[in-house]
Image 1 (cartoon, helix red, strand yellow):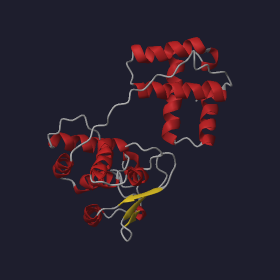
Image 2 (cartoon, rainbow, N blue to C red):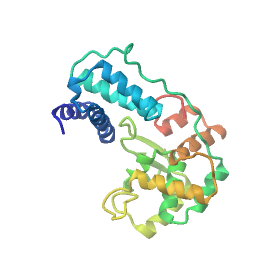
Image 3 (cartoon, rainbow, N blue to C red):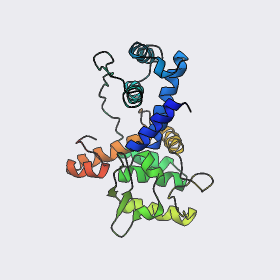
Image 4 (cartoon, helix red, strand yellow):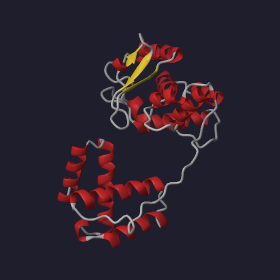
Length: 254
């Protein structure tokens, strides 16, 4: 790792960025340097503008991906190299707001029915029933399931915030069936070798296979289960502020 990237990592660690965000941002900076075959401290405003334009027009990256690259380079130049960042000359790409894909209750049930493996079905049901992010279900510990108070503890979710979400009776039932078969010790859902937590990529693959088996053609991802959870609660008349707290959102959006 170059000295610049090392200093950037130190800054992000001190600011409390998540390890995943830090990794991605450092990769963005590395790709920027590789594109010009020069150290970023030898590059400036002109090269940043041209690189972002290249990412949009040649690589055809999404607005979110370009925004992530923009944020990484801004940290490098303003916090590590102490340079001025003129937003008028280096504007941030505007992200289009798209309505999230939502599955109907029947489609959600079809996905669960198509998931024959008890562990995989439990993972998907827990995501939907509690409105979890995929990283949150992967990080769950056995002790996070509070059957006495019918709630699930989510530790250090997005934004490093702790919260509680719902533990439904049907979710608790399948969790108990799953526990009898797998008897997890620390991580509620461990990986192949039972030493670490299951990966987010594995959960994403599980969802896609079940969705295909269920014959659902919507462009849904595992995150769609979280959107569907919120939408179905809203449709049932649940107060939006309560839904917001369950999701761990700071704004009234789902």
